[in-house]
Image (cartoon, rainbow, N blue to C red; front, side):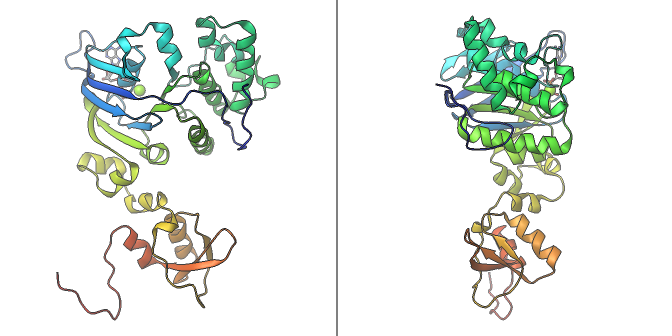
Length: 348
Ligand code: ADP
Ligand code: MG
């Protein structure tokens, strides 16, 4: 019934028995911690489509964790309403909420005195699943995150590397197959290489399971790599901009968002664009280094700079040259008007 789908070979594998994402709405949500002069989250509204991966990006202390924890009521809102699949979370009992919302905690948060298997079994146990069903599920999830059950099930968290602990954390959050996942800086504690692999593999898993996800990070590059949409947040979880990575990079709403993007916005945009978006020059007789049409425009620019060639040859899946691309061609995809040598001047 619950065979692992062997379509990819990364850390995370999709599971055949799964529930897809549902809609998530936050409506004028406020959190005012007792005794604090100002609210931590003020009048936060957001509508999330089923299966969307939404990134919250903002500086430490801006209210990301507070906003996220209100969704599964680890923190009770002071005002406003939150709906999962149209149902007010205040009307769901705690068990229903745990079944609906998986949570990957900041700093991993595995229980140190429980084995990896016991950690993953936490929510199914609370939900009163039978022993055999829990054992099966734990086994399946360990395989999903590419941890060999024979080697890892009975270990304690401290006996795993940071990256392995993160994967166990993801497995635990997926245990009851929730349609909504909350992920609070889930890959923050890993080295950059492990982190990039976890990001790529998680995206591949998400493409198959299609959960509705809120993913918190303070790393803008992680946000553009992962997100379907990004909410750039400032103090009190104020939404400075909420849009796709490409749109935010192309048109930051204000200075605050620009400062978050930092240097190299054009290169970051190019990394999100496949070469297919560019208008290619004629292939006939051209020479130069080759790049695949499946690569992105940043890769193409990289190759131009590295090789010093005036243009690169773009190849299809069968390694046939289908066109050429030069720097002007890349710039024009970003909307730059590149003067064409020999063309008559155009008056605006
Ligand atoms: P982030 O996750 O973006 O770093 P948090 O949501 O953790 O931010 O915190 C937002 C603000 O609320 C911060 O100023 C923090 O100090 C404050 N805060 C968080 N938890 C509590 C609490 N339990 N009591 C009082 N203030 C809190
Ligand atoms: Mg936080």
